[in-house]
Length: 305
Image (cartoon, rainbow, N blue to C red; front, side):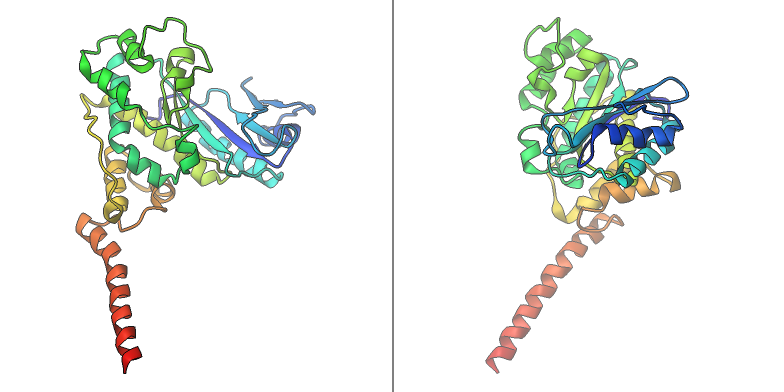
C-alpha cells in the first residue's frame, strides 16, 4: 500500500479560496501570491477550486485538490489540514472527502477484486464512516446491484469487459461528469483519468481522520492487487458485532500494529460493541439493554409498593 500514488479532494466552507491557498503555501514554505494555488518544492501544485455543491456559497467555500502524492507525504497532508483549519475553514453537511488511488497498476482482475471486496463490506463501511442518508442517495451511491450482476454473468478478462459492466454499454469515450461517478466506489474515474476514487468519506478537517481515510483507501486497493480472488456476497450489517467485524476487516487489510493504531481508532470509533471477540461484542451491546430492562422492572416494583 505504501507504493501506491494517491490524491485527495477535501471540501471546505467558511473561508475564501485565496486564504485556503495561503494556508497551504505556509506549510509548503512557498507563497500563493494571493491566488488559489500553492506549489511545493518538487513543483507539484495544490489547487483550491470552487464547488457548486458546497453550502458555503461561491466566495466562502473551496475544494482542496492535491497533486499526486506518495505515502511519505502523509505528514505534509496532515500539516496542511491543520493549517487550513487554523485559518478558519470548517466543514458542514455539504462537505465530503474523496480519495483517488493511482490505478495504472490495476488489471481487470484486480479492479474486479476491489469491487467485490468493497461490495461485501459496504454496509459496514457506511456505518463506520457515518455516511448521511442524503449523501448515500445522491453523491455516494452504493455499488449498483446491476453492475455486480453483469460482472458475474460472464467472464471478465479485459478492462473493456469491466467498462461494459460498469456503464451497461460499450463506452469508448468516458467523460468526467458521467452520472455513474456518484458512487462511493467510482470506476468512472478509472476509465476517465486513471484513478480509482473512494467517495465514502464525510467532510473533515481533523488531521488524524484524513490520514485514516487515505490509509484505509490505500489498504483496500493493495488488498485488491494482492488477493487471488474475492467474494462479492454482501455481508449484512450487525450492530451487535460491528466493531469486531470491522476489526477483522482491518486485520485482513493489514492495518495492524502501532503504525495504524490511530487509523483503527478513527475508523471504528462510531461502531458499537467491542473489538475483542465476537462473543464479547454481542455481550457488550446486549448488557446495556438487559440493564435497562432490569431497571425498568425494579422501578415498576418500587412504584407499586
